[in-house]
Length: 108
Image 1 (cartoon, helix red, strand yellow):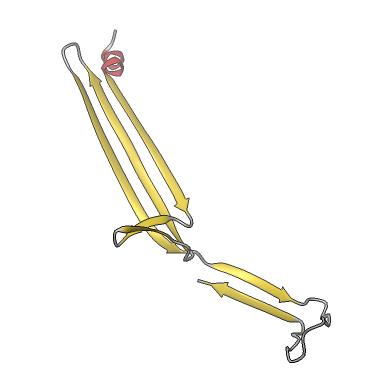
Image 2 (cartoon, helix red, strand yellow):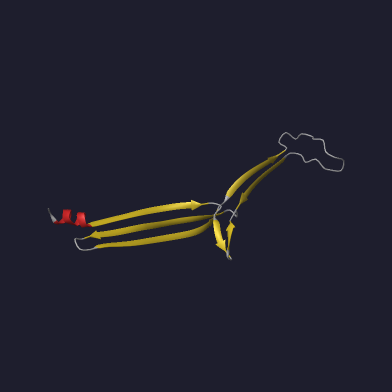
């Protein structure tokens, strides 16, 4: 058995990389949990690693974890059309009838 094969038997290295995007997250703010519905996403990235060394008389395991969290505004575009066919609906006396309305917008 050569030196590299011997090292492979006694040393085990593993890593995992991840990226996630969380919308409508629950945060702990001022001693209570709050469901965030404010168009802000929580983006997380990280690396988890483990090194394990197995010898005859002892075993060593070392762990590391690195996490990065960012809050980003979620921009959204919208088109809203009300009363597309410009219909006249029955309304109680004194209530106005809106005509066709088209709205374009950006939420940020």
